[in-house]
Length: 243
Image (cartoon, rainbow, N blue to C red):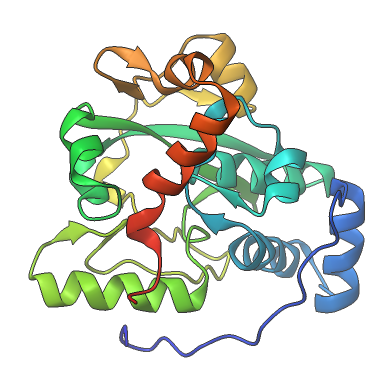
């Protein structure tokens, strides 16, 4: 088990088609936050507990509401959902994109896919403004059980990064400081692009999440629905519990 990490209580799953406003009401009812910092923590944990890290056929064209309904999304989809929940709650939030070493996904995606990825990935961090500071987080990616499973695999491998995490990763955020599971403070640079949403980042044609030179979204458009579903299962096959 990762040092100092203890399993959190299981939270109830959201209803299908839950809107952002309804999700906020559920968080308020379950967590009863007293202030913006408590609210940030509760919303972070809501996304972490209800949206499993993984890949969907909509990839970065997905809306926050759709990510919530699917219960699955990759890092940028999860981050955009948390960003949307924070802004709907009245807490200033946005996405800051960093260049992430692709080795973070070693053993988290099938080897043929990993080999075709660019050396650096366009990775969104949520920024929330509290007490006049922008705080960063991507520690919402794995639920506690998934985190412990992947972190144990990383430790056993002897690698500094892989399985979707890096050594020293965390799945908790106290909303007092930055908290990372895939990125790190060293990945932050003054020229990192910042966008109000994932949709705006895509509209600006930002990023380089490509496979063999084509953006993932372009590849997915080429595939018929049955093939997309098989592709999803294949992409997520390395993230399942060991059989």
